[in-house]
Image (cartoon, rainbow, N blue to C red; front, top):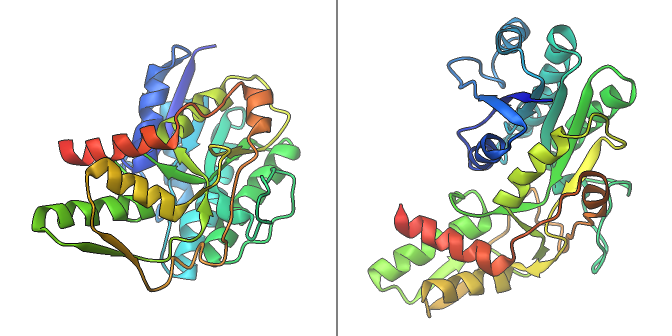
Length: 299
């Protein structure tokens, strides 16, 4: 069946790549991307969202809207309440469509060093960011399991790739290396880089969206989206510096982001997505980092 997809958040880093993946998929006939002028998912009301959905008449709805930082209340509004609004509006307007949201690996909290975490393991987020996403994911699970809405959450690990911003560690490192190269500075300063992270290329993440839209029925309501590999952040930044030709010192000081500072290891087990959806990550870290740097140079 030809898919007609409404995509919220298409102007963002992840959303832009998701849009490209959907538009390239032969099973997708149309991608409708409402902007904030059409409807603001965070601040808009129920009636307005229902109207947007009815007007678009989609077979699927994908949300790439959310918040990385802010106060606890801002995180709840941007992640949990957006999930609630979507569930309520879809139940009212188009209960048969598949509804997909992006969650976060931050939902898991602390994971044992060396362990690849599966979707069925206990979740104990350590900060409001993870809590806000976990609440959204749980609401989607309940709606899907109870047959109210065909809802699914994608637990995204550490997305990287061309176009990423300084909100993310490697995007921040790229900006600082670029300035250092331009000014001749002999060092850059980053936060702590000792943690291990699962860096997934944003284009592999984007490919997961059409994959999760294809099956007529899903056995599961939550899927990990990662590379399946854990890499020390320090090694990733060093690889970026080598790619850029920067030979200065990389200093570490201060504290990491609250959303992840207490987690020193995270690695995804991606077998569920491979076995149920036929999806697997296809790009290695070196390729992602090369493309991060090249995109910044081109910009």
